Image 1: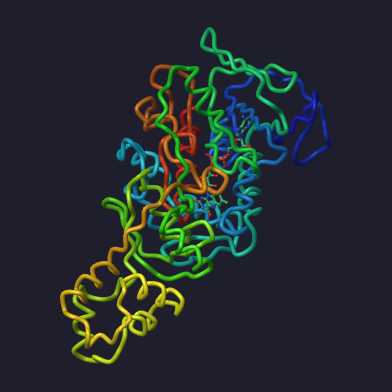
Image 2 (image 1 turned 180 degrees about the vertical axis):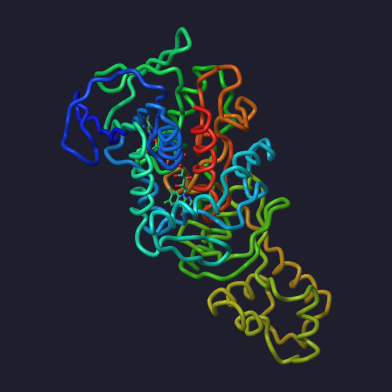
Length: 414
Ligand SMILES: Cc1cc2nc3c(=O)[nH]c(=O)nc-3n(C[C@H](O)[C@H](O)[C@H](O)COP(=O)(O)OP(=O)(O)OC[C@H]3O[C@@H](n4cnc5c(N)ncnc54)[C@H](O)[C@@H]3O)c2cc1C
């Protein structure tokens, strides 16, 4: 079995094991564009099936997003992975790949590589050590087959003729009957993320579902900009947009709202629509009336401060206009105040954009792809995997699980 190799300028060298040796092959069974989680998984699976695979990336290191993920510990999967935790124009599309390569499959790989892991809340699995271990796992898996890596190489041209894809990588031409688009989405451009996948897919006539930043902080303007004075304050809330709701922490920032509950809801939020925040998720609808009967001398501010940070409790009581003792407030006003606290409307004026978005929602339309193999229906030999595709997971390891599952599905088919 040959070692993975790395292209440096014009020469290709063995990446692992053995001495550095130049090589000259330019024909492959498959060329994978993008050495992120999806591309590396796809290459490893195809390589282990005996396919000669070249993985090309313009970055100088593979798996840059993996390295910074999960605060450096990579939230590599989620035990509660299920298709309804993904957004897509076709909610059924992800079922096949997620069903055939599950969180437990990836966990078995993690254990095979003796990577210590732990479960945080909500089924999220993290490395005990470092995200680097997940990149090493993927490179080791690639090393089990004839997989080569060409890093720090711009993709200058992609042509398709006679059922073969010809890719100009740096100053070199490589050819294969299969091409995998695994260059992700444009989130976090400073890490080398681009919209290349969409440009290339469009050139092949594939439709794109309008991409948008997701898992991203929301910005507040106008009257609501006043909430920015709470910057740094966090609380457990239920955030809602349309039919979606998430109970997690929300954080006020100097630009608006962030924290897991907001990142989650941002994927469902659409411009000009409000979101609603329940600041009293454990209280029944009539809790202020009950409180008035039990303790008429208490104030809304002190009632809220029992579960919320003092600054937030004060700001909410002030905005509700209920600063008197509850015993002096009419029931109708208490009911209206409780309703408002259970569904506080915010009108975000935007998001913090791709610079701060953990993922990109939208992408290559699933209508163009086989859900079994990720192959483009009208361009045999062309595949798309990972974040480049219109499948976007919740926060919490779901996006890597999609990268592994979709990469695995294509790797099986190459
Ligand atoms: C800060 C942050 C933290 C995250 N944490 C988690 C987490 O803990 N758990 C989780 O599940 N998800 C997490 N995500 C999301 C997750 O990283 C992505 O969903 C996942 O990496 C997508 O994998 P991919 O292989 O499809 O794309 P990517 O990982 O983006 O890989 C695409 C590759 O293509 C290359 N590329 C792009 N354009 C070009 C081009 N024009 N030419 C050549 N190469 C190109 C890039 O350099 C990159 O190596 C996080 C994302 C961010 C930004």
